[in-house]
Every structure is written in structure tokens, then in C-alpha cells.
Length: 184
Image 1 (cartoon, rainbow, N blue to C red):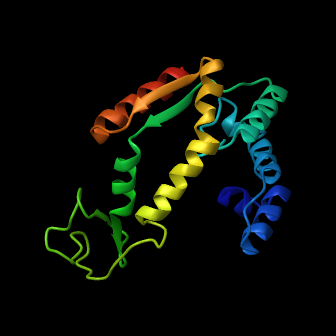
Image 2: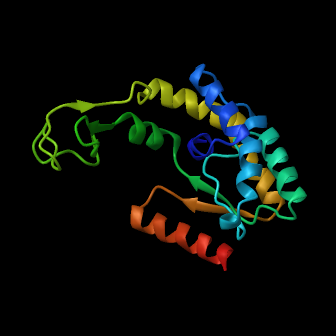
């Protein structure tokens, strides 16, 4: 969305107005932005979408948009995680207010409590929505709205499941392998 807003496309201008009003950008605007972007020569070989589609309606609209362009989804990646582990991961994160270095209550604490390893700053902050209750609400919405897309992409034989509870290097390698295979 940010790139479309910065580019000043018609759809980007609509998205900017909606966001400035504090509202969610509609599927119609997101798809218009995607359609505009797909027409650019630098994406002729394809695109990678992160976090879209999130609902069955969005997936159907994306399928239609791609079909109209003579394309289709060639891989959909499902990062498989345990819900309670996700709650712990998200609700434990915080950052240095000065430089943005990321930390976690369990997995990555600064060498000296309350002092950023990178810049020495002492002001740490957490996002207001990074709490267990909000994460559980997001997971409930995910299971109701987004999880059904797993079946949608299984039926298209493009679903790639990636166990995402292991080492970051292993997960990164698996993702790189999928992207490399699809891009070839």
C-alpha cells in the first residue's frame, strides 16, 4: 500500500484517503493497487504477496485478477506454528525506542537489562497490541477467516507447509527453497 500511495496512482490516492480517515482499505482498493502494480514491467516474472489474501473472498478475487492476466498462484506458503507459542512470541517482544533494535522477554534479552546492546539506549517500548489477549483475538480471527485458505490452496495443489517452530535458519532455508523453485 505504501508504494502505491507514494507512486500517486489513482488507487493509491484512494488508499491514502481511507487510511488517513483511520479506516481499513477495502478489498476493491487493494485489488486495484495490485492490478496496477502487476502491469509494471519489473514484475513481469511474478510477485510475492505477504499477508494477502486473508479471506476466501480475497482469494477468489485474487484468482480472478490473476486469471484475467493469464497468471495463477504457483505457491501458497503456510507457516505452521503452535497457537500458544505464537502468543508467547508476540506478547514477549519489545524494541529499543532509540534505534528500533528488537528484543524478547524469553528469546533475546539485552546483555544488560534495560540497556540496548546496539546503541546503549535505555528506553524500551512495546506495541500496545502485542499482548496475550490481543494475540489470541487475532488467532481466533485467523482460524475463522484465513485458515480456510489452506484448503483452497491445497485444492489448487500449490500449498507449501513450512514448520515454523524450529530454527530461523532452517525456516529461512525452506522458504528460500520454495521461492527458488517457483521462480525457476
